[in-house]
Amino acid sequence: MEAFVPGLTIALGGIAPAVTIAIIGKQALTAIGRNPEASGKVMPAMLLGMAFAEAIAIYALIIAFTS
Image 1: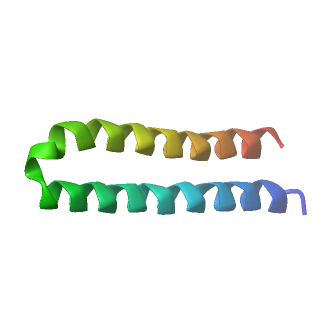
Image 2: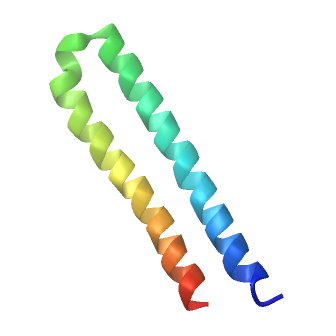
């Protein structure tokens, strides 16, 4: 039972950011495909959004290790 809680924490804390990163990447590539000139504005926003989503997964990992 002791290993169940950290495992569940990292599982749920990793699934949501993974799905979010996939959605962000898909939408950014769609936007660049429709308007290639906008890539200079889309790419930094995409990378920033992905970094914030990845930070949530790192927080879940830290919580899983400390519990």
